[in-house]
Length: 144
Image (cartoon, rainbow, N blue to C red):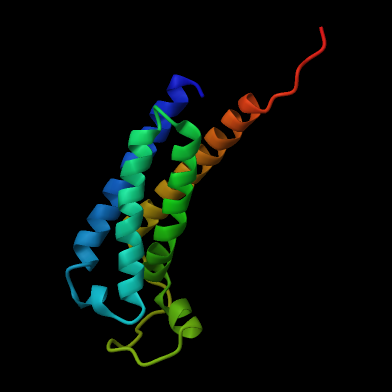
């Protein structure tokens, strides 16, 4: 993997972690973090923030493993961003009693949108990184 690609991967891991930490500070300390549905989403997001930091550190030493860790972190924190943007969809899927009435099915939140864009960026870079190192490792011999 090229050094430039590693630097971009590390920067995007840092961006994902910082965006997630900002979100967790806004939502995690309220009663949002203690709900039947929102508590697991918050826990998954906390784990994914640690995985993003781990992927950031591993990018320069084990790029393929770092790409897999970043993809796992992406899958763990995506549900929190989707819940923030589309609470109506979650209430339709996960029926039950909620303490706060639903006012809108879609709620625009700039940080959630920024988080989803950062997740999209890290997913693209991780898949590219993963497959480029896989191609180098398992390349077929060429005939001269």
